[in-house]
Amino acid sequence: MITSYQEVCKMVHLLLAIIYLAFISLGLPDAVLGAAWPSIYPQFGVPVSFMGAVSMIIAFGTILSSLMSDRLTRALGTGRVTAISVGMTAAALFGFSISGSFWQLCLWAIPYGLGAGSVDAALNNYVALHYESRHMSWLHCMWGVGAATGPAIIGWILTGGQSWQSGYRVIAVLQVVLTAVLVFSLPLWKRPAEAEGGAAAEALPLRQVTRIPGAKEIMLCFFCYCAVEQTAGLWASSYLTLCRGVSAETAAGFASLFYLGITAGRAVSGFLTLKFNDTQMVRMGQVLIAAGILALALPGPQELALVGFALTGLGCAPIYPCIIHSTPARFGAARSQAMIGVQMASAYVGTCLMPPLFGLVASRISAALLPVWLLALLVLMVWMHERLNRRTALHSA
Image (cartoon, rainbow, N blue to C red; front, side, top):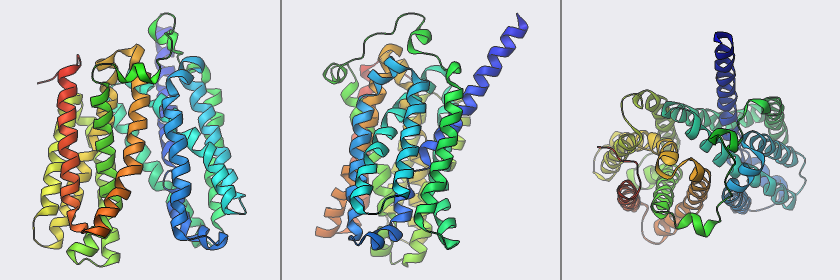
């Protein structure tokens, strides 16, 4: 009996280690296009702005596969969805490495996006169902490690005098290795029916999902969070340069502290979840974001803006993982995959839509409105989160 229990514990810990690797894999390709694009667009003879077209194709595929994640996971199980999705991403990355024209990049961007959304939703739901909140925070910290490693690989390859295609091939090989690990780990993953101790329910159609009490609130909350994160991250350097008189070189370093704040904050958040519940963690994050926005808005030395972006990053850290982790408790295990799928889709919409919209505001009026823009999104996020707490079964003081 003891031996059997020890074997189960070993399997659980082995699977958790594989999931940590999978989250690093999720982050690896995310920032690679931006790092490689300065080398790509002159070779293909296209304007620098054409990166937006490739990004939009990837984003559309990601949104679509996120909305399909409930149906796919119920049919195949989390393990198979993860292995297939990572395999698709590996194939797309290899496709990028052999592309000889811009239209080929666009073609390979389709499996790239389709492979990203469903695995993101499936893995997040699996962890929310089977592991403690601290692991969700640490896993998203590992995503940050992957997102930082991808551009570093591209930079290392380019510095060594090799082409951007070689960088994509290296990352594709890493994804292939992980795909093999995931295939061999398939017996460790629980199917939905096994997790619930019975037959898996039917997948919920999108219209039915959006009618669940609290669904619209959590979707808007996710939309606003990702809009805050992406707008702050993408516009940090421009804001510092245009509005605070910081040199472009220094601004780039300052802006990186925003992402450092998110990654380090998620590492710390994992320990804080031992004392605070998910709702309390989200509220603490929102308070820190508000403090960061205030520091950005106040006149003062350049260092004050630096503190503002660092605080905003720290505040962003617990919100995404803690809202996801609370989803099964709010909506029930049977609905959680569908709910996390629409949350991911809402997140990607916010990521794609709001930074370009602020770009229009910055070009037509002023980039100095960044703190006002972030504050408006934060207020809506807080409102939706508090409405969500009132409308669902999960409550905390």
